[in-house]
Length: 115
Length: 111
Image (cartoon, rainbow over all chains, first blue to last red; front, side):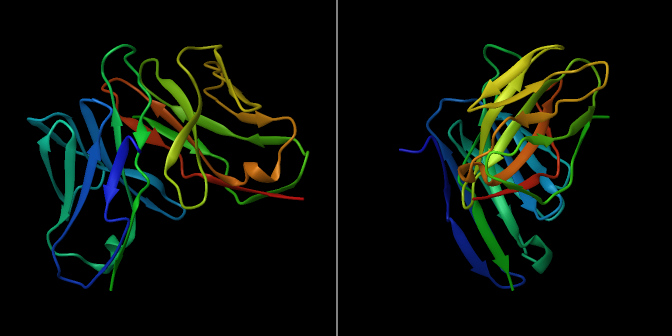
């Protein structure tokens, strides 16, 4: 079974709709992240959370919100989707224990299309 | 601030050719450096990493050396295969465990 799972894997929605992307992990990591990937722009950080009560904005948080429901779950919401939020979204996890600069483990991604 | 600049693609090579993908970085402090690979339709997975200056990361025939004097972490492979076709991302992790990614370099290897 995958350690980091994302649902849904693909989603098509309309402008103005609210949508939630979910991420779950079985790695026991305390840190979770949401990124979006756009062609030619690489990965950009939307939000990150270092534990259940910690939420931090990333580079491009406008138009997004997150919820860390439990250590293993981190969801991303688009309150009112717009076409330029069409992208590939990745969830990632890491662990602060051990080395200070740990590897990030990525989910398979959610392809979101906003019409 | 922290940032990563990597060679723009796409890169197309014949099988068994030598590969170099350039990556330079700007960082405060002493970051760790990473190369991630993304195969079609999949998420990113770690290819190799280096945590201090002069370290060499290696995996699956790929290698990269952390050069503090030139702030570089170039990815190399002596003989590429068709199965190496993917998008490669250079990344750094500085204080606070935030990651900064380059824009990605698409590699296509033709038989």
